[in-house]
Image 1: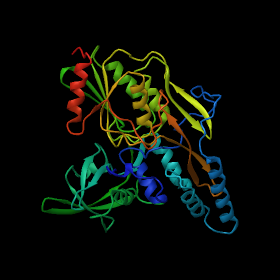
Image 2: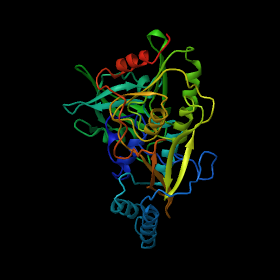
Image 3: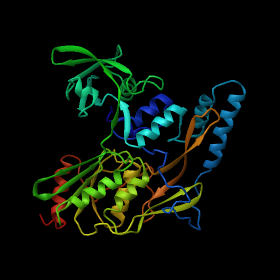
Image 4: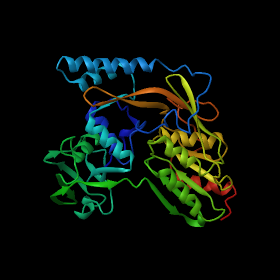
Length: 392
């Protein structure tokens, strides 16, 4: 299930709307769980000089205090925490119930519960199906790309934001389990019908590989879910010898930063990928040695390229490993970390920012491509690739 527009918005919507971003075609930007390695992990190094991040530790304390006071007063700790996050001014802050956060973690593992369809809102407000996952409940029910979605469980969806439509398809925290039913009203041409589907646990299929004319390999990464880094490395190894690669990160709104670093290791022979700070303490992320450093490479980006995808783009650009083609990326370069509240809910707050190998901040500015291309960006990427000495 997905929409195409929500990922360029702030995550601070309130629990329902924020959660829907996770279960769309790609993950919401700045996913916290496992996004950055633990400070004691082998891929994190402390630096002597702090970076001067904001007093985010105080924000964590404020949120925890508000939740504890609400619980003592017999009120909702989660609602109190949401108000505290809103007051903190943290653009990417969010609060999740215990069940929602568990589902969030499952999504980072590359799975989600739903019916397996993607949708977008057209200019006239109608909701159109743009993709149906193979083998999904939607596919088994005969739903196809181009069908119009009219209602979900009797609620009309015309004119609604895509996030709300996704939320209806997904179900709330109590009825979203695999096996639960959802009834869709559909239209194809002049034919209208309804179909009741059972939600299922589905894979996100975050990496797709296509062999283009001339031996060029196009590796599309939709999100950095668990295992994506290894999938990218495998795709590079299997590409024809000497042939160029287009790494398509358009619309990739992030996910697990450790997976982005593993992906970077496919193209770099060790070295710095990014630095980031957590409450003022600076750390570094490094690629593993042994990557393919000679194959021609183009990174394709757009305004939907965010977070971990920007981290990877910045590393390839600053290290001179890839030519970046497309349009300016979104500019989401902040680090979120979770903290558990007294009722089991989770507050996720910004604790710092990351920087590219040259020390450039990304938050609020994004990454400017080396070659601008809005329309026909993939064709432009192929042209640039041929100029890099693609031997095929």
